[in-house]
Length: 293
Image (cartoon, helix red, strand yellow):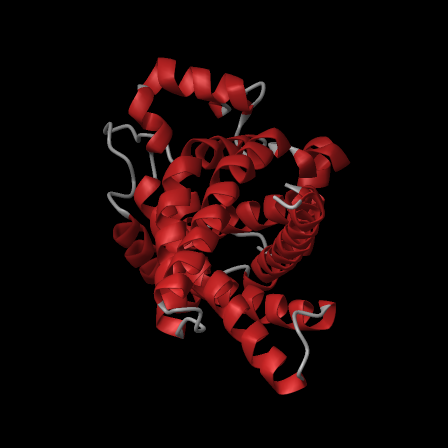
């Protein structure tokens, strides 16, 4: 949640770039003039739509998402990690075992966090829509209430499949590599989890998490913000349908549209989250030793 408070404006820009890229590709296909999807253009548009506070629109949803999603995935990852380490009689886990822990944690955490993620995407997209098409959710709780009332309870898990796949790919690049790089650096330097080691490991894991997950994040954003067309159908039938249509319209590189912005959203978030996690865990362990718990 601390990391989210820092990164929220970048997340807003990232979501707008993904949505704008979809709109631009459709206008190009129709031979109409288009505008740039540069982050600098998007920043100007966000400022024009509501000022500096617009960058923090949906912060309550983002914090709620972290409360459920990240707490769950980090807790499950660490519990599985410790369990497998006990099964290995204290030996270090293989990279494959770490990856299994990462994928399992991402799978469960994303299901728990999907309702807040859905609300966040819709709130962030709202100011980009014409006034007549806006949902105008007051806050995350109003979003939950209206989604259930207007679309049904299980609509809170709309886009759950892309959310799960995106989370599993992100965690695969983030959690396992973080511990793997730390272990290798500790052996090479003869130290134990120094701040420098944690910074390097979190930087590597942030890059891998960004690269692995962006195509799925792109598809997830498009699916969660979509509305039914005049024919009563949604534009995308599945995450794979969204990925294929994006690739056809924008090319393969379109799956990684906005990568620099996405990287500057994911990498710092991963670094702050992982370093805070290790710092808090060290503090709790020291407190338990003092209290002999």
